[in-house]
Image (tube, rainbow, N blue to C red; front, top):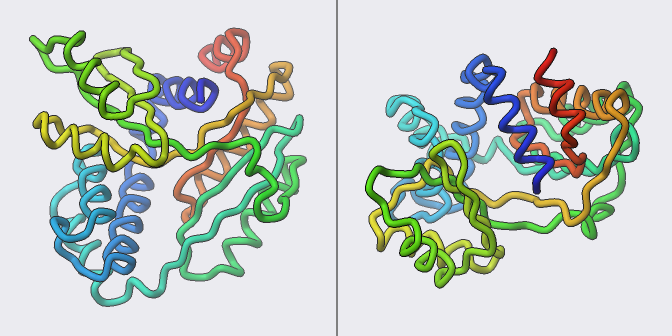
Length: 250
């Protein structure tokens, strides 16, 4: 978990997320469209996945018109999109799990395979990383002025929080997969709206590499994240102090 979250923080500091805002909106739109397709209804109050997708879109300041268009697409042509999960290894045998939403499975698999091969990695068979990643609920919650953190942490623990981190006015809570819904309901009861709530694949073991080799693995991860069909990329590269410093100096 630490490697993935620390890399995300570094990218935020370098402004990379702002530069890719249109790409973020595209991914959020796809998730909303598929949520309508899978749930069978376009009313967020009756579709849990859609409700979560809309919440995450609002957390990223996605305009309401964009959200409405994504819902409308789900009602009309959501069947064009399907989920694809690809897993393999990058440079230095870093485990990499890729989640995609695509309207052309053959194109997407070929594109992802090309990125792996070009950067010294290789795609594996389905389930080859099942022993490396656990699926967890991850909630990003803004810290509000005057909040009693001791009381709030007790509420969170009671609702299934396994880990609570506070940094830069943001609370990050991790829950077991089976407690994701329970924790989300607790936030609703407390009147707390998370900036983001999602199921992530958290590595159970990290991979430490020399800085030069780690940069090669991260270059592949960046290319995967830039692909228009990719929704999420998870990896188990350990973000050491030396690597973090080298990235911040670039």
